[in-house]
Length: 170
Image 1: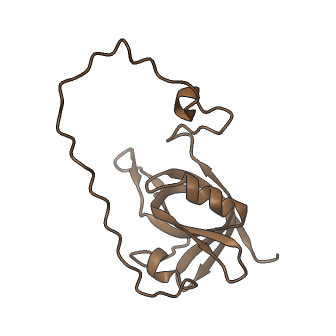
Image 2 (image 1 turned 45 degrees about the vertical axis):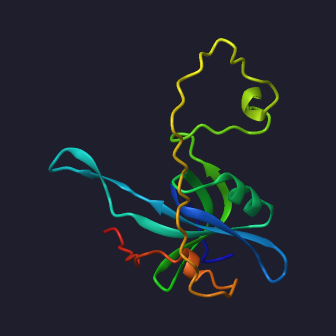
C-alpha cells in the first residue's frame, strides 16, 4: 500500500511474548523489541550505545504460534514488517521474525542433535557421582496482573515503560 514503510530491525525481546486469539479466531502474538543503536563518538574515538528504541511487534497467523513457542525474554531477533507510528509509539506489523545468529545458536527440527531431541541417551557410565548438594528451587519471576481484563486491549501487557521521542537526522 502507498505510504507504508517496510523496515527491518534487530534487537532483543523484552519480556515474554503474549499469544492471543482475535475475535475472528486468528492467532496474534505481540512482544516488545528493544533496539539499541551503535553510535560512533568521534571525539572519544570509540563506539557507544545510543538511546534504546522500543517497538511493539505484532505477528499474526501461523507465525504467531511459532514466535510464542520460540522466543523468550532477552532473545536477540531480526524482524521485518510494516512500520507505523501511533500515539508517539512505534509499531511493527511483522511478516518475518528470526533469531539473530550473531548472538545465538538456533536449531531446527532437522538439525537438532539427537541427544537434545531425546532420540539417544547420554552414556553416563564413566561419570563419577558428585557429593550430594542442596538444590535451591528457582523462584518463578513475578508477573504483574494486567490493568484490564479486556483481551483486545494489550496496552497493559505491551505498552513500553517510557514514551519514545523520534528525532530526524539532519
